[in-house]
Image (cartoon, rainbow, N blue to C red; front, side, top):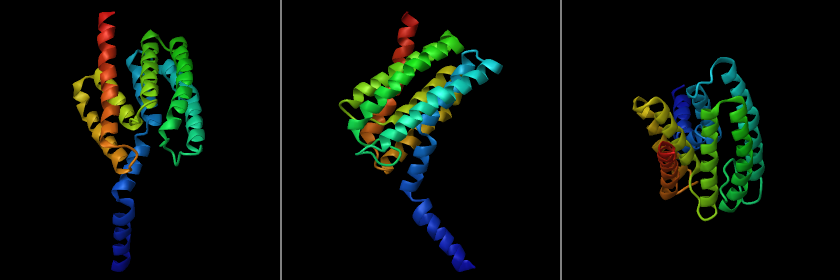
Length: 210
């Protein structure tokens, strides 16, 4: 019995609890494909969409914001040079991000039609965020995971205040996961996070001036 218990703990220590295994789990859990739609639902509620209107937006998001990009990403990760769920080859990233930009335009229109102007402006911001990632990916590979979680945490604090500051701890957690799994360097995860926070700051600055 004791020998079997030791084997279980040995397996956990050598496989399940390895840094790379933990990093992979965090990467899947905090993937932008889930994080951005989740924070968008919070954004819909914060913009004044409640009850039936909120549920209608959630269904639309699932069908248009999540499902098509998920299928596209699955396709791109099956191309030569990509492996697993991540698009590791930078040459493939602009193509994938370009497709996401097209779907983003559809999301902007749907947000205005089925949501409200505040919710529509959120999707315009998303489109600018994607466009920036697209342009950066033409010359350098920065972390979409770090950028996505920084975007989400920045928006949550903007909407609900600094009492939500603990969500910021998700950023270094995600950054560590991307580095330990060798998907990105430290500079690439830092750039992804700073890009998102910087864009939120710039968007708010321009909004206050216009």
